[in-house]
Image (cartoon, rainbow, N blue to C red):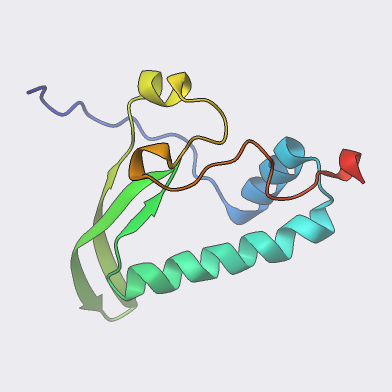
Length: 116
């Protein structure tokens, strides 16, 4: 078993940058992407607050290990397990959930702006 390597902190990813990168990668308009991203972030926050385990490819599997009430809010300690980069790269696009026996498709879930 390998020992854990120290994590070197990278710059914080804020919502504004997240929206900009999602728009760049997906090709959809910012006005269409922003409400969807905000809704997904709210759903993720609610799931973590409920102590639910998240299994979201390619992000990985997130589990709340501890939580503590503080005067300025609740603190959650989580474990996030991400698949090996080499194994993830070997999977074909659209096959993210193939290991779980779920149906997969190579069709995108939504059209990009270029498809319209």
